[in-house]
Image 1 (cartoon, rainbow, N blue to C red):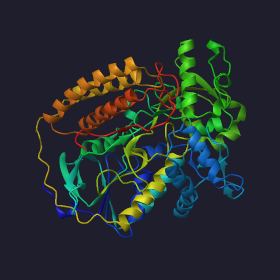
Image 2 (image 1 turned 90 degrees about the vertical axis):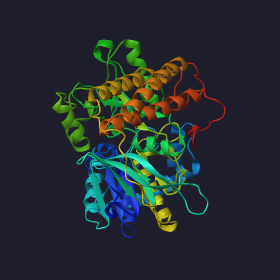
Image 3 (image 1 turned 60 degrees about the vertical axis):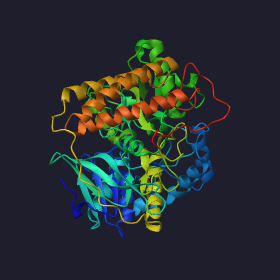
Image 4 (image 1 turned 120 degrees about the horizontal axis):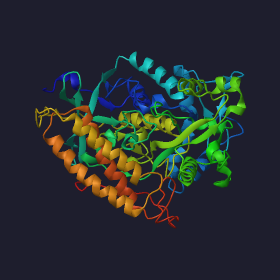
Length: 530
């Protein structure tokens, strides 16, 4: 399909989660914005967020305490300027959401603040136990009323369109190619500014709390375009996802433990609480500590899951604080007011991503990355609970301000896409290779790793990469093929980063290097062509 003026915009935003919609809304008064999303607008990971948004709103709390908590969780790798930017910007982000009409939970007329693991104070603003869904609904409603925002649903990012910035010949971005699933054609979109807000890559693992859209599309596309990535080895495994064959990766919020939930072994293994033996902070330890403790207990006792018990809080309390979790568990025959919840760790959050500065700018002029797609330095070696949603808003606002203050000029008119092949992609082959990738990442590059396992993973991924490259070169493009291509690329980056870190820090634990290195350094990978 040839490029037409209808696909020319001031800014292209890829992704319709909190980061993407926040950027679009800040830009809409002065820019024509296209928001592209590969499913419907509400299908991203932001919709799934349960716990809430961290912000200093209590007079007894302080910015410095929130910063300190973030630095402790990040195990020496947080970037202090990025951390301060996000923490200081959090109260105004909450105020902005309230102005838009987000129905946060109140108590006696004031915002109810809960506490989560790693936080020294109650500072989690929430909408019951479905904060992400409440925020997304509101932002989607507001964005759909904006005349300068146009949505392109069921459009999957294929690749970025390169250009050369005027004057100094540096790499620049002129737009992108996207698969329009309605027509089956790849369409060119042009804009002098592109914002990647495509989320993380949790679907590279067999067990994940992430939606099916979390396939690392923005990270892989930015890497192919010549951007550096950072800290890809730090994959956060949420300690508690619901263990049930029909649960579909349902997350049991950190807030359950924040409100008194305790982790126990099943009755068959003694039934005792085990977290105090692993860490003095017990259930409120950072996620990496809790996930490794659960993993160790499961391996020690040969368990398929452990139990999270909050039944002592009573039905009225649970209905008020966790109506979504209570209802979902009930659907699977689990009454959390009377019995514990079976849980297992699952891949949850990609702490690394496309390397950016404090305004979301990447190595390529006109290309920004925000939200889980980016590595801003905030999360370090382990994301502190509920810091991600506020990071989305702070960096979306910063990117929008940068675009407004420093426009990149007019984008070149991109060439239409030339299809490599008209042959139908082999759906069975794609599914088989995706299954192989997710199993090997879970078994070899999971919560606990070793050099031998990482080498095995690297070898198998290299073989998969060759197979996928051949499929891509000889098949008509489909969304499944694009997602497989991106996941294999992201898996390679995760393994390469993990192989280069000869220590155990935060979310990266190597049994052959169990100690901390004396100096904490972020990992940074650059494409060979960069």
